[in-house]
Amino acid sequence: MTQNPLKSWADAAPTLIAVAAGRQPADMVIRGGTWVNVHTREILPGHDIAIAEGRIAYVGEDASHCTGEGTEVIEANGRYMIPGLCDAHMHVESGMLTPAEFAAAVIPHGTTSMFHDPHEIANVLGLEGVRLMHDESLLQPVNMFTQMPSCAPSAPGLETTGHEIGPEDVAEAMTWPGIVGLGEMMNFPGVSNADPKMLAEIAATQASGKTVGGHYAAPALGPAFHAYVAGGPADDHEGTRKEDAIMRARQGMRAMLRLGSAWYDVKAQITAITEDGLDPRGFILCTDDCHSGTLVNDGHMNRVVRHAIACSCDPVVALQMATLNTACHFGLEREIGSIAPGRRADVILTSDLETLPIETVIARGRVVAEDGAILCECPHLDWPDHSRSTVRLARGLTADDFRLPAPAGANRVRANVIGVVENQAPTRALTADLPVRDGAVEAEGDVCHIALVERHKATGDVSNAFVSGFGYTGSIALASTVAHDSHHMIVVGTDRAEMARAANRLGEVGGGVTLWQDGEEKALVELPVAGLMSDSPAIDVAAKAHRLGQAMEAAGCTLNNAFMQHSLLALVVIPELRISDKGLIDVRSFERIDVLTGETS
Picture 1 (tube, rainbow, N blue to C red):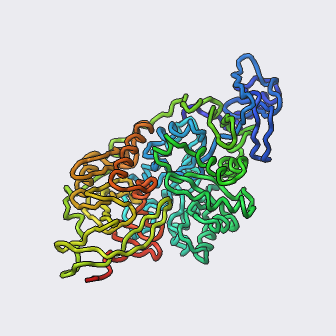
Picture 2: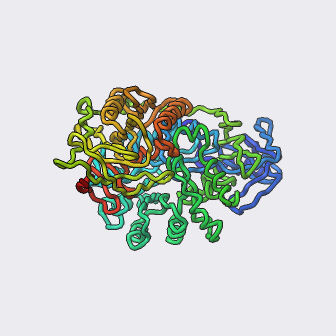
Picture 3: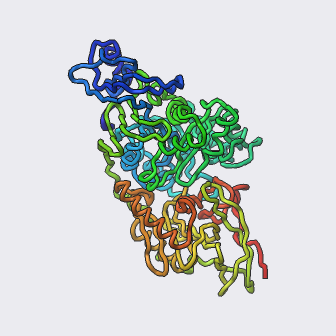
């Protein structure tokens, strides 16, 4: 099931050989460019590339012997010819877009290969959701490889998902044509403690000869970390410090350095290469989570490469980390990641290696984008009706659903509070003394109410706690059905009545994000597919997301990409505190804790 079908190397080999030998004309020749060779780290001016059957047949100083009457000739005019960029770890759903619209958004930025883990939709629709993402990915004119989600739920016993993923699901998915490995193994305590279910998923992946993705989010690098590495994960993107990157590389993992919309983890870790001189083959660049606004306005992997260069990384090394290193990691170095014979003809023409303007994008031997404009179709799947009706509320919610009772007679109480950390996925475990009015604990100052509303099975359950760091003022509430990873509904607000209005609104529209202030809806991003994605164009979704950001800022929130922080507050595998449908979770000990710790007066 592909648009622009690509022949295998075996089927294309006779043609490639004939073109390289000059016995048959190429379909396309890129003439007179500067070849950036990521295999040898050379920059070689005055080279041509001959392409046939969507693959590279010849790279050399003169491809005139490959050029015939019907050959399309592209004049590089000395520009750099670099491999199409690869995103080694990402979640399509984080862009609020379906795979087709995500591809359409990133193709003009030079991304021609993506390795995406659809564990967001897996939590909502189970294996069927993964298959829908996989199938739409195969329709695209670029390479969208799927990693089978490993952890739904991400932390068994600490959250409830709409569907669960088990070893039998993993084994089945390993037979699908677009599956390249196991998605990030977030249940790192399970692996470190040799949980049979987790090890069975890893074993099924390794038995199929595919790559196991990692996710070790704890800062400690002692025995538990070493046990996790011994359990089989081959990479990790959760590092935030230089020592994290070094330790992963030393243990034979690929250290994935991410720059997403809200995660800025490259600068600290790339010093392992730029200052300590470690071999860059052990390092890969990725995005993890990119908001639609980032994709439309700032870029995708081109943004990450530019950032790495700005952090003093040699440009060709940065390109290796976004092309060849990724291909090698997934065992695809004969298919993608470099400009060399036999590889898929994924090539970018750019006039500068540092600022990296993406001027021409060629994917599988076709020009798919020019000067920021997409020139190809990105086909959509026909998503079933039930994938658009996943927000199930037991009843209309009221302010009382967001009320946290105080001990009898208390005037103030001490509470555990989730502390948001700007530009990082981890939170802090804080405490605050909060007032009591009419028998309920109230938010005060920078502390807001936070609630998780069950939305998969219409149980009517609501968990309540407190969060700090958003800076909201006045009477506001922000509700979202994007709530990694169980994807219930997260509501944060200063006023319980506003929280009820926001939650009920998402029940009406079938999912998305809404912000209410003083009884009025100030912003709405509809996400009808699984309550996670829109199949509208990225520019339209980004415009609505921009209005949401403006509304959040007007309500007092100045955090960079604050919505991404909001959406991760239920991710019970990243320390320190999170909220789930089970209550407030201390991820340092993986146990539920009380919100209230005692009276202060």
